[in-house]
Image 1 (cartoon, one colour):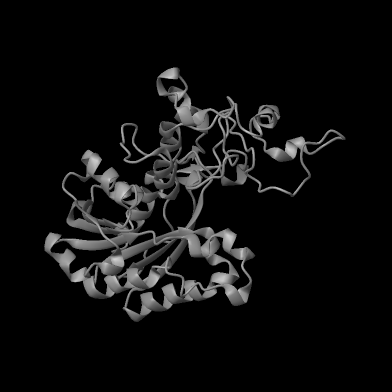
Image 2 (cartoon, helix red, strand yellow):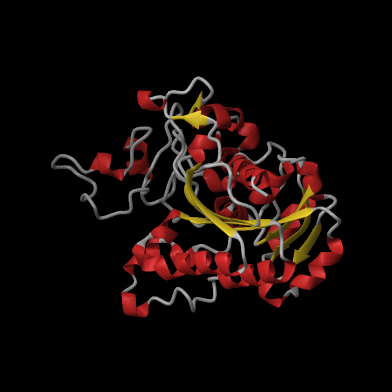
Length: 347
C-alpha cells in the first residue's frame, strides 16, 4: 500500500515519538491530542507538524466525531500510548486488594477504544510498558483483546526492544495492533541484532547501536547545561568511583563498602559506557538515578533526545524537568517508524 494514502490521528501524543514514526513513513498526522501544555507546544515548535491540527485537550473531554473534520478521503490509523503509570513495575509493590488498574484515572485504554468505536479507523496501535504483561495487569490486557475483537478488528500483540530497530537504548515495550484485515506479516521486521549472539546473525541486519556514536557530538562546552553538574551532590564521590557500564553494586565489595547489595534500585549511580547501548531513559528520574555520562555528570537534553532518536534539531518546550519527562515518556521515533510501518503493511 502507498503510505501516502494513509493518514493518522494521534492520541496521548506527548513530544511526538509515534507521530514522528508516522512522518518517517510518509504518513501525515492530521490531528495530535494531548492534555500536557508543554507537549503540545513542543509539537507546534517543529516543522514536521506544521500541517497538523494540535489540540491541547484531555481525550476524555474531546468528542471523537469532531476530529473527522480534519480528515481527508484516505485510510486512517489511530495511534497512541495511553499513560503507563498504572502498569509500571512500581505498581508491583501495591498489594493486590489496593490495586485499582481498571479504575485508575490514568488508565485511558477505554478512552482510546471509545475513539476507535466512534471513528472506525482502518487500523490502530497502542503502545505501553512491558510490565503491562505482568499477571497483576491481566485484566488490562484482557480488556484490550476483548475490545479489539468486539469492534471487529483482528488483534496482534508484539513485544519489542528498541535496540532491535536502531535505537541506541535498551527499552522494552509492548504494542497492541488492530486491523480490519488479517495480519499477513508475522512480526515487524527488525533492522539490528546483538552481535554477541552469533545465532542471531543475519547479513541483512546491523549490529546494535552504541550510545557513544550518538551523543559524542554533544560533549563540547557548547552544549553544557547548569543542571548537568553533580559535583555538589550527596553521592558525587561515589559516582566518580563507578566505572563506565556499572552501577552502585560495584561499590558493594570489601570492608570499606559504600552500600549494601540490593538496597537500591538497579539504576542507582548507573553510568553509561560509550561502546555499549544506553539503558532506558526515564521520564522522572530521582537525583541519583542514571544513566549518567561517563564524564561523571548528568546527561544533557540533546543527549537524551539523541538516545531516544529524536531528530538533531528537534525543539522542546518547557523547563528542564518538563523536557526530561517529555523525552522519557516518548516512543523512540525509530521504534515508532517500525511499528507504524508494520501496521500500514497490514491494513
